Image (cartoon, rainbow, N blue to C red; front, top):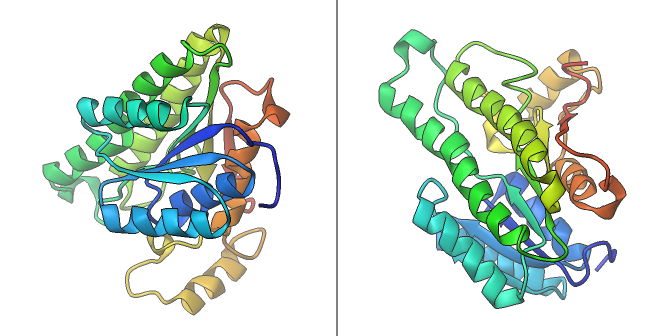
Length: 255
């Protein structure tokens, strides 16, 4: 353990089997939280739980597809029943299908992104808010949007950008709806981050580092730990008056 900001609290993280989601789950565990790691595939979630337990933390893996209402509701119920509360939720699960102009995007790829990135966040938030507003202590929700959306656009990612812009708007609207019920909602919009999603077709990690050095104001991409740190800030009492913000973490790319 490295801190105590979330001791005694339960944090639910979707898409926790890899990348940014796993980094967020580990960061909450390091700060004392009991972690519910959620995702579609059990094996990566089990590995996340193992890593948390190695830190001395407590974790539960729950297989769920948040684009299905029944799964989203069962996930929240499992968290509350297993650990006694749901204090923090991070809606990180998302998919990218693209690389071609909008006119050439298959309808199936559009619907896949819409179902997970937008409907999944809606269904997950709806279930989380219903649980949190019934608790005396309320709760905090952080949605993972993207700089591709409300903040920037790039060729070949129109559908993805549309879904992530929707996450930003949904976050702000829900924040206004539910803050008086004790549920505080914000978003983080990562830019290029050290995950496979930030690699261009045929690009290696050294190629990406060279491109970032030449094009990003910071001179490098963000680490998953840096994204996790932003999420933990918004979920913590340090951000108790931060409501409906969309925190961009992109090394200055959209400054």
